[in-house]
Length: 79
Image (tube, rainbow, N blue to C red; front, side):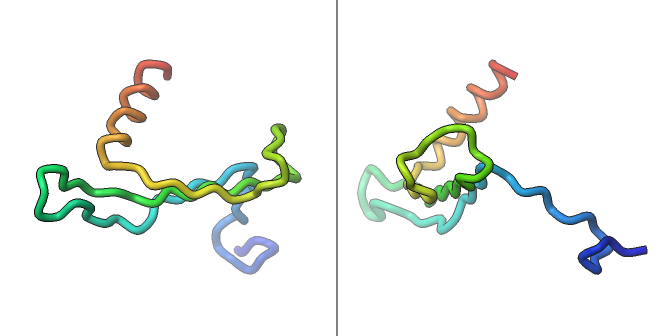
């Protein structure tokens, strides 16, 4: 049994937003402010998203590891 795309797995649904966490790197080595940063890329499918981003479809920011703790804690409180 295979799907229409020849795979044993169903095709991935198209998403309005796709977020990737990439490129961990140590910043401030040899200082008191040494920390790990990650690149966070968000890709917007403008055909599916119900918000306007002024024509932009890709956003990239760098975040510290500690920012992910904040996000987790916030999501746990809300959901």
